[in-house]
Length: 114
Image (cartoon, rainbow, N blue to C red; front, top):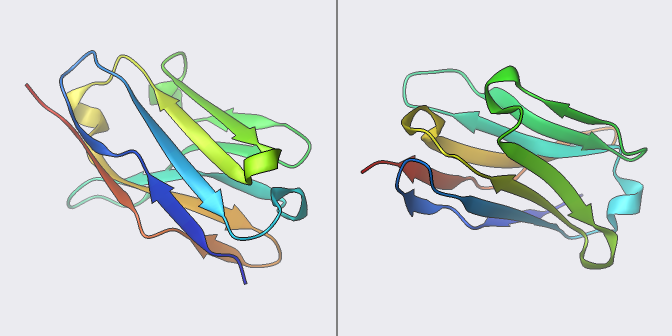
């Protein structure tokens, strides 16, 4: 069982930045892949970014060059640094972790609006 606790969402103006954090209840050395999805109202949940245990990183095309995923093994935490935010980035952001199962965080709201 892996528990994930997210933090860092909020309201930001277009062009601004936020950093999301996802703290795992176990060592992230034991997790194959961690990452972030987002879900906007009326839309399906979509992958934003992911990082494997080997360090391979994947980004969705709309966030390439603006978002950066990283991790801190000492803190068992994965981060999503979001820069140059746009109104279309507004969504609930969910952290996930994959072992032989997929675990989800509770979600954190990100709203980009002037």
